[in-house]
Image (cartoon, one colour):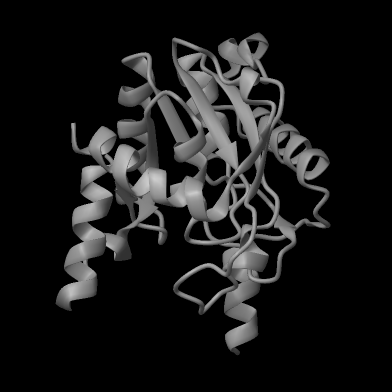
Length: 225
C-alpha cells in the first residue's frame, strides 16, 4: 500500500519536474515474473525506473541504505522498506546469497525484480562487467531478463550530488532476453558468465556506454589506493 501511495505522491512530483522520456516500455511483460536488469549511473535510478513501470518493481539495495543514522538515515531506511527494497551485503558471502534467494521468491510469486548487474554505481559513466547473480536468477526461475538503460541520470545527478539537476530523464527498455535454453545447466559458472555477458552486451547496445571488462567495485578500490 505504501508503495502505491509514494508512487502517486512523490511519483507525481518526479514526473512533473524531470519529465521522464521512455522508450520500449512495451517490452516489460504485463504479467508474470521478469528481471529488470539496469545499468546504474545515479542513486535516483531506483526512483525513476520504477516510476515509469506500471507494475510494482522490487529492488536489491545496498545494505548501507538500511543502517544509516540520524534523520537522513531513518528517512532513507523508511523509504527503502516502504518500496520493498531488499538489502544486500556487497561484500558477498551468505548475505548476498540470501538476498538472491529473496529475489527468487519475488520472481516465484510472478512479480518484477529489479537488479543492477554491475553491483554498484558506475564511477565514471562507463558500463562495467556484470556480476553473475542476474544469470543465476534467470536460470533458476526461468524468468525473462528485460535490459533497461538509464541514459542521462549520471549527468543530472553525478556522484556526490544529493538532488538531481533540472533536466529530462531518459530511460530505454530493450526486448526481453529468454535464457530457458540453459535451464539444464544451472550452476555451470561458464554458462552463468556467458548469460551475464549477453545481458551486459544488450545494456551496452541500449545505453551506448563504453564497456570496461572489470568490476566497478574493483575499479573504485584501485582509485582509492
